[in-house]
Image 1 (cartoon, one colour):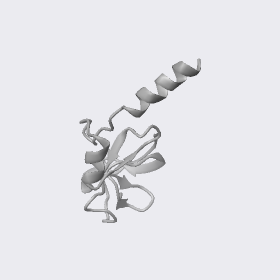
Image 2: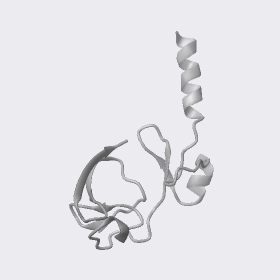
Image 3: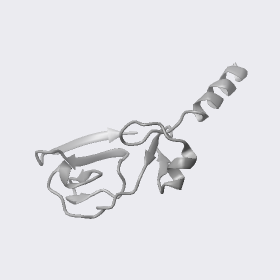
Image 4: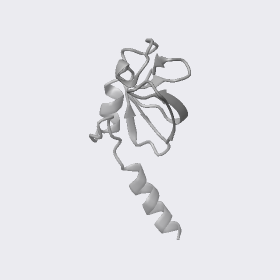
Length: 98
């Protein structure tokens, strides 16, 4: 039982994070490019956005996420946890992502 758990944990730690478009990237490359490995299981390479804090009214106004509460672009290209954002039509959508 303990041996199986150790193997599982070892394999889980070897999973490479992916970029916003789903491309695998090493943890070192992610950090070297200014990103951070985030998510409940550390599976995403999250990059800062150039338009963080900019006013937005729909999804395409931002390189990351148009946050519904503040109507500003997110500081990162991915957001985790429960939050509301504006879709392309400017409608509020709620989501929980880990």
